[in-house]
Image (cartoon, rainbow, N blue to C red; front, side):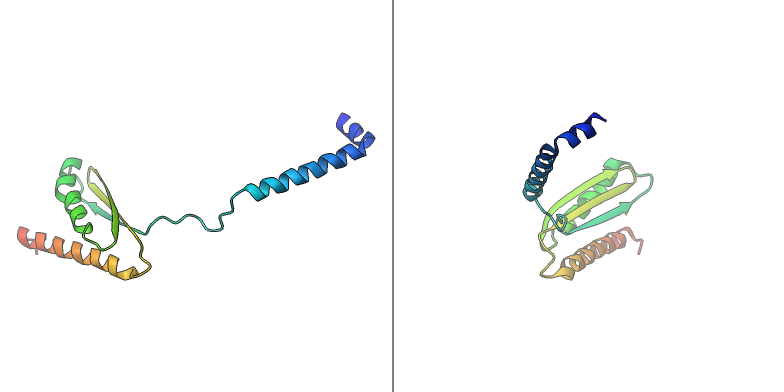
Length: 127
C-alpha cells in the first residue's frame, strides 16, 4: 500500500525509475551473447558390443582393445574413447569432419569391423 501511495505522490521519480530499468535492460540484452544454433560437437560413431556374463577385464582385453585398434585406422578419426563394464564394451570414435566424404568414414569403419569379426569367427571355426 505504501508503494502505491509513494508512486502517486512522485510520478516523475517513477518515470525516471522506469526509464532507468529500460536502459539497463537494453544494455544487458545487448551484452548477452547470442547463439542461434547450439554448439555441435564433432561427428561421432559409437560401437556397442554385448557379451553377457563376461567380466570387464576380459571384455577390455578381448573386445575393446581390438575395436579401438580397428577404428583408429578410419580416415579422419581424431579421438577414440572406450569403456568396458561387465558384459558391455562401448567405443566412441570422434571424427575431424564428415563434410567432405560423409559416407566414406562410416563405410570404412563398418567394413573393417565386419572383416575383422569375420576373420576371428573363421579362426574359431564358428563360420
